[in-house]
Image (cartoon, rainbow, N blue to C red; front, side, top):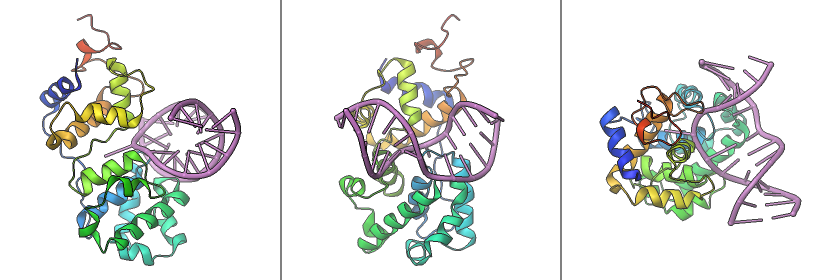
Length: 214
DNA sequence: CCCCAGGCCGCGC
DNA sequence: GCGCGGCATGGG
């Protein structure tokens, strides 16, 4: 099967996803997406929410206020998100990047290459920022995507990030990248977990790992 | 108690 | 260019 079929099956099974809504009063609201993209690195989203709430509480809701904030205080705020020493530095770096572009409005035109040249921003974080905060579709390849493709037999496991990204982008329209990724996350949390729960999985019949004897 | 979670960096090879 | 250890918290 092709990745495009995965989209069709998951879309039919779960319906439209509402993903990565910026609910706090960050300015602009997409700045919250950028902060969340950094904070969620290798961490459960639930922990990120606590850190974002702390920031909203202290009104650290735009890149300028983050730049002005003492680094130790910032670390304390984002502590629940884990790896807080690294992440505080990474947040500062992204805030500097926004400032260097003359504000968030201009920042949204940033190149992927420039994002990747920023310490603390790897391919997944860069694509999440481009796609969800800058409105410029770029498929996000995460742990869930790799695990799903692997179990479906569509990748061996040693393919590079860029290879998988290109593969996913070539089978749906750019306008569907965000939705596709959101569906994969939803599916991976419901069924295709680290320890798979295959009962009721909409992809079971097409999956190499699943029990297709129904 | 254990393992896990929407990565990335710096290092050795 | 690829594999590995380190980074840290909160939930199951």
